[in-house]
Length: 256
Image (cartoon, rainbow, N blue to C red; front, side, top):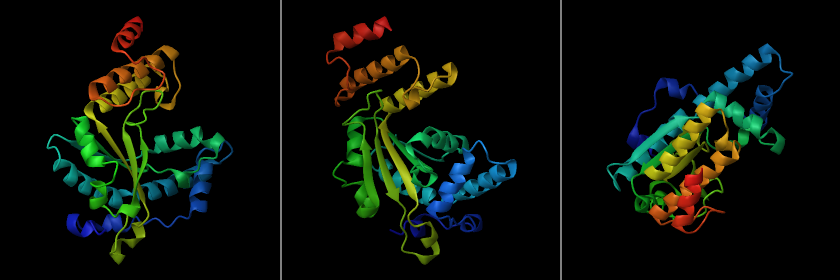
């Protein structure tokens, strides 16, 4: 794949942001960021290094976004395609959460992320295409993997969407420095996106952590049930441990 030659010319600033960190170096930087014994100088140096590494995802992220947008618009002109670099506080929070499970900075796959939101569930299938007919044409198939399909298998908390990971690949030596950078792709419907946004809003205003599987049980149950109702509307597999019939869903939702 050599999408950058079709889509853009790299700026001098982007060319200067090459990342040359080994996994061992990245993990050492990550460990410093969540260490309670690091000095101010060590912390400052780690923050500078991780910011440089984070910024190095800008070029492959832009190339991926442009390609995704092109193919998504061919399916539905009302699609919303966005991109983002993971915020520094989110990186640190993820490292802290995974510290007990040996999660490391080098294993985080969503430093660069793109999201594709379609109005209709049928368009999600046409784009992601579980058999890889659509995305595999846009990218070299061996560099793209569907990591999780939370539409066919919704999470117990009600989260739904498709997560794929793309490994950036260019045949142009000028861009070889960025080869292997992983960009996460999330594909959702507007209904699924509204659910996720509502959950994050409740987290923000009530200081819960529903997004991370924590928080008040009533809120957790509410969002699982709400997502279960949406599966009925979209005709997709039900959320685990939720009622199958609409009347029972309605009754329990009203009680909450």
